[in-house]
Length: 395
Image 1 (cartoon, rainbow, N blue to C red):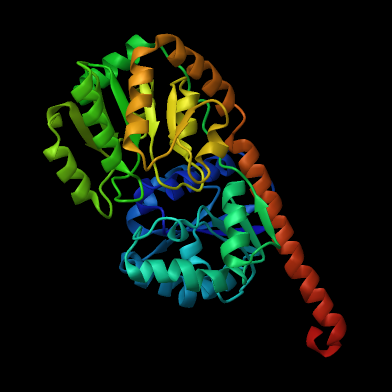
Image 2 (cartoon, rainbow, N blue to C red):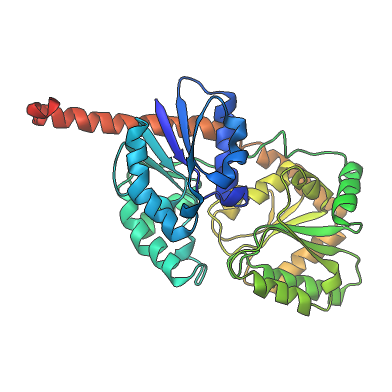
């Protein structure tokens, strides 16, 4: 089977979609099986996919198609022709904002979340309209849809009326890369690379306001530091995105600004050390369709405090402390609780590690291939039925 995958929404690997796609493709590159993959890659991102050569075909996409509107145009007008030219059996688009209307072959889409229905002003009005209205119609054109959590599948039923051809396939976590390690080694690395010497709360997410809820986390940290003398720091790891100026402003206005570190995007090689060096990992997001940083932290045996919104509670199970992300005082209480309770931190570390081991990319990749096969089978079945009804069309 010839499988095409559009990779043009990975934003140089800095997003959750990017991590999802790269993780899947690493599994397929290591275990190609009988299938051949054709990857459509923006020119500047070709180096990210060198690991896929020579087993996969990399088709360069001109950089002029990177901006969102031009990228949508490329998906709707150019990609269908490329799919036919490369004789694809299946085409996978890993983002609901890039789903195809035309059906050059079997179509599979991954929908990570329907955040526009949950977080007002998450995007500008054009993206909000596209996510709420246009995507609903495009979803009905897909032969199969992968939802990365039951929460997302439930949203598809509620907001898109999409109940057929939806398969829940949770993300995995790289248990070799994200794993427990000697704390003294991790602390030495983060001290050297990031200048972090004191214990710290860590939040790994792009700096996006209001969706990722950084400002309430900063408020909770301010309250904690005001009430209790402590040398704990707050570390924010993630690249700037929409609304980042508001987050940076909140940091500057904090009376403890010199104890808040904004690291920007953290390279893949450094991220496991940053997790292992953290005393506590926090995820206060207002809504997530999965919540990969929660699992990554747990896989590194770090205690987690997580928002109870979206799929975060689903992913964390009973292995994290959950809180209402719109209540900074509730978050402050949990920050203080974990900062002071070594026993609780150890208990959560053990529970989290067991929870993380329930998820792996090998299983995700295997089930995704099964979805490709199912979509291709649907198209073949429809074509066979059409030929029986219209025998002259077989010529």
